[in-house]
Length: 460
Image 1 (cartoon, rainbow, N blue to C red):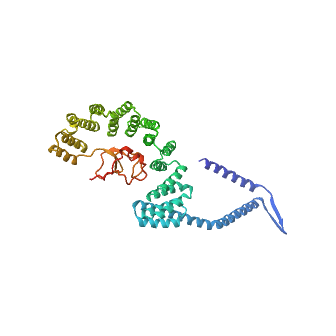
Image 2 (cartoon, rainbow, N blue to C red):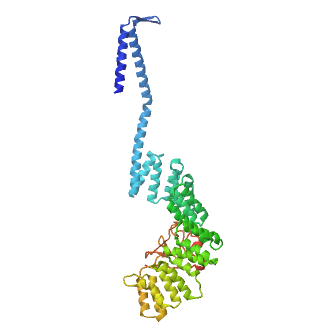
Image 3 (cartoon, one colour):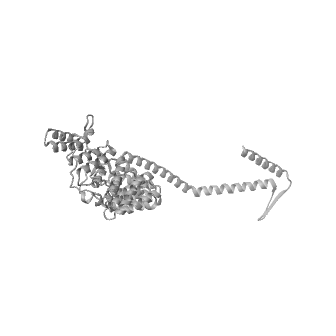
């Protein structure tokens, strides 16, 4: 509305100026090269305006003709780019759908239409991965690393390809380079996993702190991983550097309360240095909240070995802290059996074998041992053994389908940190053996004095 107002004002002023000019007397005379031209002022001004308009029109036509080839080429480029983007879209959809033929065709066409487009190399790499051509995929990812805007994407692709061909050093190299550029969660996790698999826990802890500082890791998860790393360091040092080991284990317990591996490690260090009472107090406090067989195993080391009755009383004290837990009742039954107190051994297991309960294989085998020790080979022994063969399996330390006798900080299959869980294994689980454990530090396979014989794969 305001524009229209000013336009009308300007038009009125121009009209007034033209009328005023036409009313003025006078003429304009021009003599040039023997020519004499005389005209009125309005006609002269009109001619001048027409001349200016003609010059402007001629200049516009000249500029349009000069720019015409560029506009034609630009239009062609735009059409080419539009077609290329459409091809890229179709190719990425084909990759997602697993349509190898369409994906490869789209990748080839995209390289012709948009050779400098970052997504082109991504499509080429994904099409190569889909076809199993890892060399072509790595080549495409390498091209991505040459451009700042796609360098991180290329490094991640090269990292994945290196892991696929099981080249741990190359995978670590690419993850480290990516971590130097930006604190990405995948890069931080990969660097941490590599250092942990190599047993370099000091550097692993530094890498974890870098990820935390860059806010690439959740604080709660970071606390859990800190506890795992500190426990692993404590296990490595518990014999040669016991004071450091005890400090690390206690620190891990502060970060992750009732963490069984940390508590067991701290207690072992205390027992070796003659502080059985403090070790037992620590184990009792953790067992009350998390009744675990590993705690019972270390607790037995702190009990006097001479008198079976004292050992039974000590185990019973521990068991009553979590009286409904099978771990304490199993330990009490075993201690009573060793003391030949068959009544107490049966009493300990009675709630686990009562009507309506589903005793595990360990419970059934203990009942068979009690019957055999008291009455010799008999029908009840065979009955309990038969029940044990069909009974539910007991919980174990398991990670990625592999069972270990002791807790390990990383999975022997994937190298994942904090992978082991205490749970009932599936029938397909395999026991950890002395073979096939790449990148697992010897200190974590088992304690030297307790290293078991090779275990066969679990049978379904």
